Length: 426
Image 1: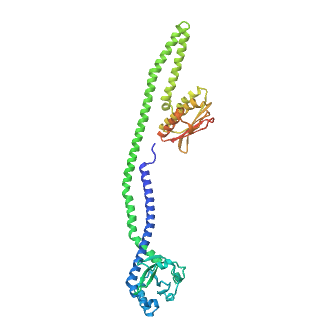
Image 2: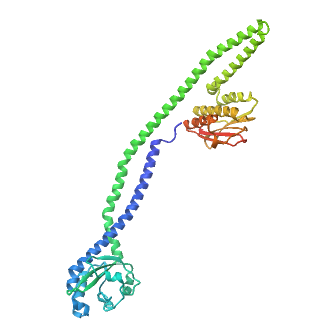
Image 3: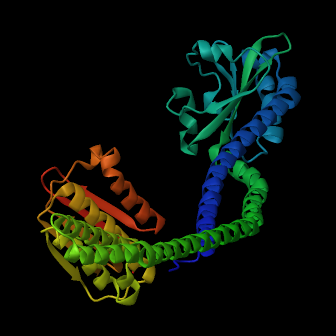
């Protein structure tokens, strides 16, 4: 009995898990890369603002800009229009003083307007580094930028020639920032996914070799198990043959001798010899029963039904009502051997511990799997507390099923009998 190829199963699982890993890592990498790309784009925007502020705008700013001098405003506006606004990603430019007044903007309606500044706004006039934040379009000073949609606001402190602090602000279109982030992401996305796919392909031969090794190990274990079963079968036959040809024959001869001696012996020795002959014949019967249990000849010669019939006959001899039901089905030889050994152990446990009045054995096929049911109406027990020497047979049943790759289900309750169900490949 061989199931699906383990190598194919292993490779299929590897391919599925590998594909899932590539997709997961790819999605995670895409998200992280996009975030990294956007962060890099924001850093580029900060560098751009720093270069523009330090190299172009601040040199053009004079103290006249704060006083509203038209020539100072014109000088700054020419620099902004010719050097700053040439970048299509920029939507707005503003310059603030510490009083909250906009001293310059490329939107003339904002020049000279004054707005309240909080402590955080005032802190932005100090230092020399550029900072970035998403523009709050609900604030009144940003009312003319609302039509642009989401904006990124980058600001940097600058100074007039006399040292008066100002704040230079540049507003970038969010779409340009996202596009720049996608462009940065696109530069290293192919190597990322290429490396993942290449890694999966490199591991494929290793997975194949590993799966082949597992398959070889499984075949070796199957051969060892088959040899162990065959060796056990041979040993049982040898023991049964030795008992039958040796001890049983010797005891049979002793029984005949005792019976013959009883005929010629005077009283009261004749009665004692007849009793000894009877006990000897009883011992021979027990040995013959043991021989059937050790190696049931009917199992391989006449089939499972005849072997189970012989097995239940010993229970019937104890006054137990037995029934055997076998549905027509072609079972593997290993399955027949398993069902007999499980039935043998289950019947032995029932007779010895359960004291049943009825015992039923059923063999059939359900959902494509062979099924054995052994049930009795005996005293039953609690499986959860079935420990100790008295329930050693339960461990035997579990070992038999596990070694054969079958499933075992045991149900019992005190006073409600016991039911053993075994399912195996047909």
